[in-house]
Amino acid sequence: MKPVILIVGASRGIGLEYVRQFSAAGWRVLATVRDMAKGAAVSKAGGEVYLCDVNDAASVARLGKGLAKEAIDVLVVNAGIYTGRDWKLGSTDFAAFEEILRTNTLAPLRVVEALVDSVAKGNRKAIVFTSSRMGSNAQTNGGSMPYRVSKAALNSVAKNLSVELAGRGITTITTHPGWVRTDMGGAGAAIDVSESVGGLRKVIERLTPADNGRFFNYDGSELPW
Ligand SMILES: NC(=O)c1ccc[n+]([C@@H]2O[C@H](COP(=O)([O-])OP(=O)(O)OC[C@H]3O[C@@H](n4cnc5c(N)ncnc54)[C@H](OP(=O)(O)O)[C@@H]3O)[C@@H](O)[C@H]2O)c1
Image (cartoon, rainbow, N blue to C red; front, side):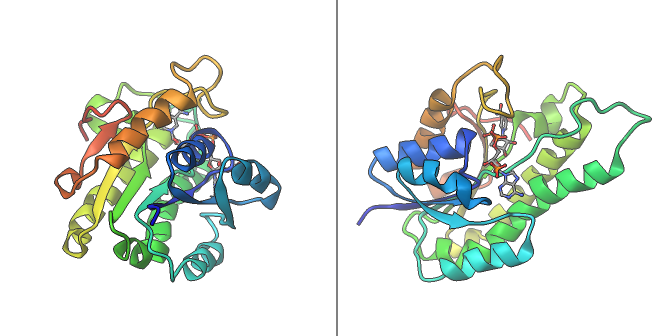
């Protein structure tokens, strides 16, 4: 049987490339969009399309219920936003800060809550959070505080889950996809989606329980928290 991967947030960018590459590598790919109008690109890339807005509790619960019978080998939580790039101390937009925390930090936890039982039924039992090097407290060089904090807190969610879920045999990691040419990364970014996901795919395909609780760069090297 084909291994099964679920990509949450697959409409474009890194998520859509995950669908393309895992499908081409012979995996069965389940993938979510929050707007069915974007589903055509995902099915063309080889994914089975599901609807999910990660900020909508009912939508995430529906996804979990719809996939309850599936055994999911790898869950990739990829959806994310990057607001507050021009953040400066003294002009913090607290409403926008709350929104980025909801999307990048709390929503990934909600997704895991809805899908963990399906992951526990898979052979590989892996949860992969899409974080960012910008969330590394050890490496921060300032600026964009809302995004950095949201990803640092996501790293903490992942690290804590790696302990909580170890008893169920689940391997939980976070990844940095590189600075990637997508709508988010911009045209001047360092690498394209194919290089980023090509590296991440290798990281995912060779995951073992010894990797639980680690933070990986797309090239397979390890990043500090
Ligand atoms: N690009 C980079 O250089 C870079 C670097 C480090 C980390 N990352 C991380 O990598 C991930 C993917 O980034 P990307 O560059 O591919 O970004 P992108 O091109 O902006 O795509 C973002 C994806 O997230 C989805 N999304 C956003 N909010 C959502 C919500 N509430 N519910 C469901 N889906 C939602 C988007 O769906 P819609 O199409 O519906 O908006 C889209 O599929 C993000 O977590 C990002 O933080 C990216």
